[in-house]
Structures are given as structure tokens and as C-alpha cells.
Length: 531
Image (cartoon, rainbow, N blue to C red; front, side, top):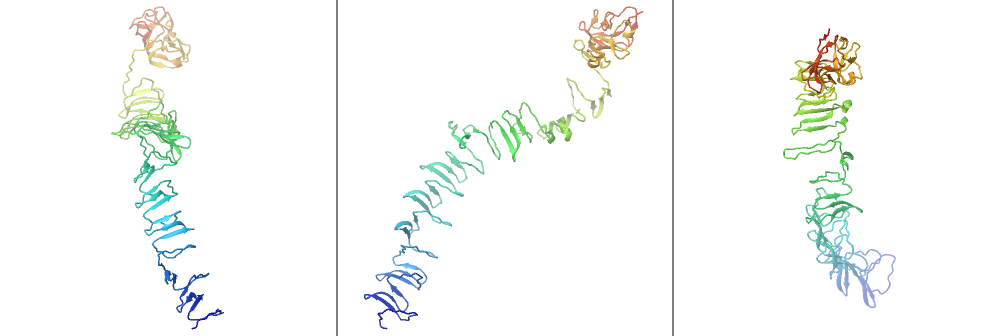
């Protein structure tokens, strides 16, 4: 076909075998019969479509894009200076360099090493045998092939930091470390919260110079000071778990609570309060526990509050407790046992009893009194003071004190008489009152006689028989002398029998002391009237 050197225009398709574009006799572009396009610069506002693209310089092939989309460069370099390179598949090459305005920003060399001037971020895992972080060419941190992390500055994380161990150094000197078993070793720990699933152990230096150097504190005050001998807490210790010590726990107060409810406390003055009770244990290989206090007070008998002493077999051998529940929770009892067998029970309701030998140097007071042998009553004293026994009553009476009115024997409290003279002898009148005995007439000396033990018959009593100390014995008495009513003074005794006409001669007892007026008082039921 001849070469047409004219402008071709058409409103429809133009069909020719090939097309060559020349300028000044020089070919600038051509389309051959296979549809291949050869040109200097090719630009398009839309897509360039074809089975391949070859880029040449001075007839030398520099790069080629094949029909499978692969980019091949004869020099091995691919450079995009004005835009970016993107691919939905792998980008393969010996190295990659990224620049901005001709300044290096990132590169990947032939060994796979990455060098970046800015930050690295990823939405998934980043995999490499090591990472080195530098600032102005100075190493600031790296992760080596073993996974160890080294940082010249601060390491922070909003999540977990996981590893087998952690070392913190200053100028190459280790200041703190966390070992693979979780143990923390540090020259000093400063943290807002310290928690551990196991024990927190503090070890002080043993040079004797560590007092006040190991402390826990808040922003304004020291809370805990540790030295080689003790720990000092200010103002208080709060723990939701156990607190134990091999030495002394010292403080101004102690409070123990469960679920926010106080169960025990010891105040600054040493007063202790325990809602659950106090138990001191003792085993064969352990030392005995003690509770020492100037007062031991147990409250809450409505809830079963009591004091109990247990032997090693678990028997409550002594107990101070309530009598029962309800109203009886306000009434007390004392129980003493031989192992598990009750021996003594003193109760404010029901019957108190003693099943072993018992003696008392003071009064025994009760509504009734009962002695038994092998379960059989041998002696009973009822509410009226009546005594009944299956045996013989032997009253052992020793010599009394030589004080006027002292006595041992049968004492009655009746007669309604006052202003009496202690130690004088009185006669019981027909009107039911007492008068001083007078041997000058039978009407004032017969019948019932008694020694006044005080000013009032119903309060102080009247001795009917027994030992007593009189106010006076007229005449001269001697030990063993028979005594009579005195004819010299009413109410007195005399070692000499009255001899006046009409006098009543009646033996009233016997002298037991030559000067102290102590007598055995036992008036004879008969008397003689002097003619």
C-alpha cells in the first residue's frame, strides 16, 4: 500500500494493514499488522489495554509487562517517581526503596532487612528474626532472634507484657529483675498497686543499717517501714485475707471482719471483743495457748455465750453457761465434770448438786438441802429448816470465842422483844415476850430460859441450848462449876445457889472458863423452891 502523507479523519472505523507516524523523516510511532504499538511516550486518560508492554531506551529493552501481568526489568530496578506501585499479588524483587522528594523513607534490602525512618504499624502479626530501633543512628531498643527485648528508654503497654524474664538496668547495672518463676528482685519498688497470686517476701540487708530505708508510702505520708527486725505500719493495715506473723504484732487497735461485719476487735486500752468466741488449742507437740486479762467478760447468752474449759479429749470439764434459752438465757449455771461425768452443778433454776466431797468455811444458803449416798437420800433439810435423816446426827461443837453474845447451839428467833441486854438470861412470858429471869419467884424463872444474843429477839436470836458467853456471872466461878440464876441481879448467873425464902434453885448450866463468862447453857427442866 502506498504511504499516505495526509491527515486521516473518519466518523467510523478505519481499516488499514499498518500505520507509521514520522516527523521530519524520523519514525515516532507505528502500529504493525499484529497490532503492536511502538512509540516514544504513551499517555492515556483511560485504560491502556493490550497483551504486553515493552519499554526500550535507544532500542534497548528496559522493561516488559507480559500477558500474565508480570513486570520484568532488564536492570532489575522498578521506580515510580511521581505516584505509587500497587499489586493484588506479590511484588518480587531483590530490594525495595521508598523515597519522598528524593529523601529515603524506607527500604528492604536483598537479605530481607527493613530500614524505616518512621513508625511501623500492622493490623496483624509482623514476623522477623530481629527488630532494631534507632534514633539519629543511636540504638534505642531491639528484639533479638531469641525474643529478648532490650530498651534504652521506657517500655509501656496498654495490655499484657509477656515474657520469660525481665531485667531493668541503669548504665549497664541491673536495678530490678523478674525471674522465670515470677520472683521480683529490686533495689527499690515504687508502684501504686502491688499484687501477687503467691507470697510477697521482703528480705532486708543484714548490715544493721537499713532502718527507715525500705518504705511504702502514699503521696504525703509513710504507710509501712521495713527493717531487719520489724515492720511498722501507719496508720492501719487492711487485708481481705490472712495476716500471720512469727513474732509480735504490735499496734494501737485490731479489727477483724467478715463480709464487712465486725467479728473481733482489740482496742487501744487492751479491751477485746469477740463475737465468735475464743479458742486456745493444745496438742501433745505444741505449747499451751493462754488468754490473760484483768477482766474476762462474755456477752450474748441469748446466742449461747459461755466460758468452757476443755481437756485434750474434748470434754468440757468446767463451764460457765446459761441455764437454757428464752428467759432462762438470763440465768446462769456452773458445771464441773470429771472427764465427761457431771460432779458439781450450781444452777439458778432447778436443783444444784455436788456428787463429790464438799466443804465450806462460810454459810451454805438454799431453799432445800439434800445429801445422798449411791442415789439414796440420807439427809434432807426442807424450806422450813426441818431436818430428817436416816442416820444419827452428831453435832461437833468446839470452844467459842469469849465475846459477849458469841454462841454455838440451838437458836430461836421469836418473842418480838427489843432493847434487850446482850448476854443476859431471859424468861419466856405467857404473853409471848421475853423478860429478864429472876430467881426470887417461880413466875419469872420457871419454863423456857434463853441467853439474849443481841438487842432484838427476832433479829439477833435467843440461845436455848449450847455454848454462849454471858454478860456477867456474880460471885467467883471456876471451870466446871454448876451455875444457877443469881439472886443478886436479874438476868445474871451465879456459882452459888440462891438461899432466900421463896427463891427458885434451878441449874442453868456449867462454867467453861474461869474469867471470860463462857458457859455451857442447858437449863434443867426441874427446880426447887426454898422454904
